[in-house]
Length: 134
Picture 1: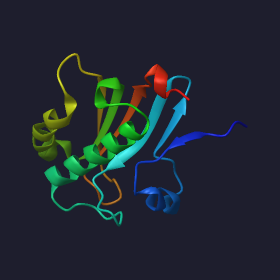
Picture 2: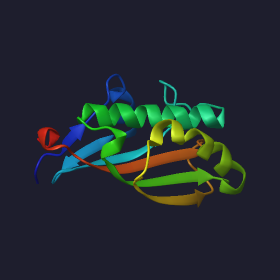
Picture 3: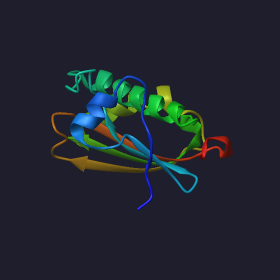
Picture 4: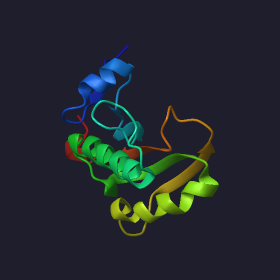
């Protein structure tokens, strides 16, 4: 099996090692980013929902940058929300701070009952710029 081409954001590798997953993998011109939640440095949930969403996007953007990408390179987004009936509007008030202008990436939003103490998670697939594919 080929070695996975893993991308780590600065300063959080121990958290990913402890939880036994890779934050992102480069493969065939794409970057596949694991679901990112609004965790503090120790991995615990940020208690307030909008701060949790901002932290999730902050970590996502750090991973994208480590791979030579920006959110503009994102082609597909999946978000998971606990209690979307109550939380969707608050989450979607924060999203434009990070999302950018149209055309937007594709989106799948999923309501869930449990996210390990979190209320929001985002995972993406991005097209790697040719200079960042290796």
